[in-house]
Length: 301
Image (tube, rainbow, N blue to C red; front, side):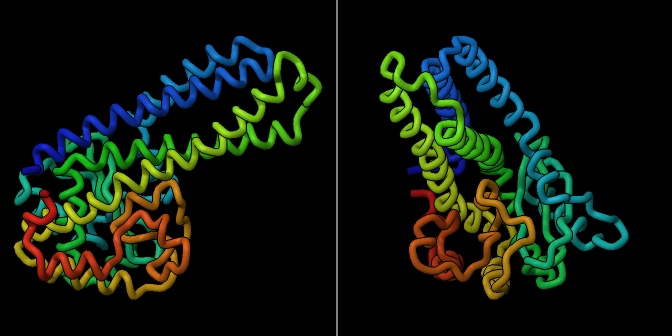
């Protein structure tokens, strides 16, 4: 039977596997660009670029995410309740005290980021702090600290950088094919290479999105269960999820590349139609039902 320890080990393996996939994708893209533009230097650039971005995503992706949302360190005077809750729950969980940040945004949400337990950050929106009472906020913080303890944070944060880059590269290459200089397309089977290159560029962000979805939904259930064990009060997180899902708006800087990081969908809970297929979070109703009516052993199978 799976345990938290096997889940933690699996997350480490997934992180390295994701970096390997990213490296292979970038080198493959460089290979096709090499033939398309008749420039052997592109393949060397692709190798250096992929290795460099893996290094950046490992060491700095958490800072990139915090910068994207203009997060600021929590203020001891105005956000002392948040700081006390994080400190107490970190001690209970046996975790080093993470850095605590606040995002000035009326939408209620939170996420954890960082490369390991010793370099973790928990961030909450100002809207979350205003909406929730103490037990509900404890439930949310326990959920986020569970991501830290379960080693979800490195995998989730690395995905932000790599998924975003793949999407950007796809857009740049697609534009260059349709609007760039096409005089050499007929040389050395250029048309075939362009088609293959385009297919690769179109599939790359789709593959990245599938990876993003695969790591998100199950880990949310597990973090809910782990957080409930930490507080010994699953109703706190369940009530918090109810309140968060009642907010119909979206975060001011909601971004597809970072959506999976948050405890709730930053684009709002009222997603309809085909968009549900691409949700990074399981339905709130299922999460609440699991918290209230199902034992945590269900999440470890």
